[in-house]
Image 1 (cartoon, rainbow, N blue to C red):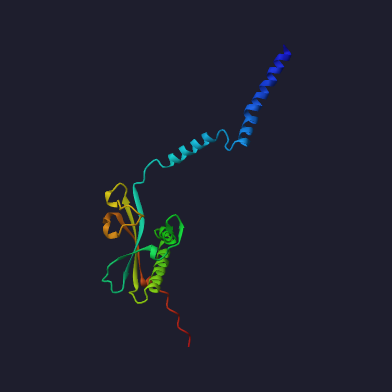
Image 2 (image 1 turned 90 degrees about the horizontal axis):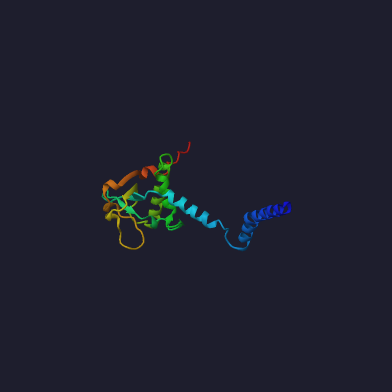
Length: 191
């Protein structure tokens, strides 16, 4: 009787070792995914879904406008694709990344000045006989989602001109004039 009990206990230990160690190692080494992969995958999906429990209520984007000399004080939308075509990631350019920093309270004024100086230099280089850029205005447009007014025709995404957007959706971040981005005067030489 003692021998039978000893054999049953030995087979029980072997079954536990085989079931919890040998079998998973064998399946994992022969197959491509561990047996618990589907549970982990489902758990990750639930975690991601729970991150986004509320839909986005507004779609926001930055808009840059400029005033030129002799332009009767009218603001003109500046297309960023004319100034920077290099896309870092997705559809965003380096200028889009700089615009994200332009709204920052600490670093924003410096970034806006540098970006305005760049836009003025590029405008002068591309259109040497054209009017000079004298002011740059930074705007943030926040359009509520689900509005039929922001439904654009099919095709690639394009920001709506500011004239077509209700004023309540537009917030001015800052204005930079040509005095702000002009280089400081050179010091006079000592006689």
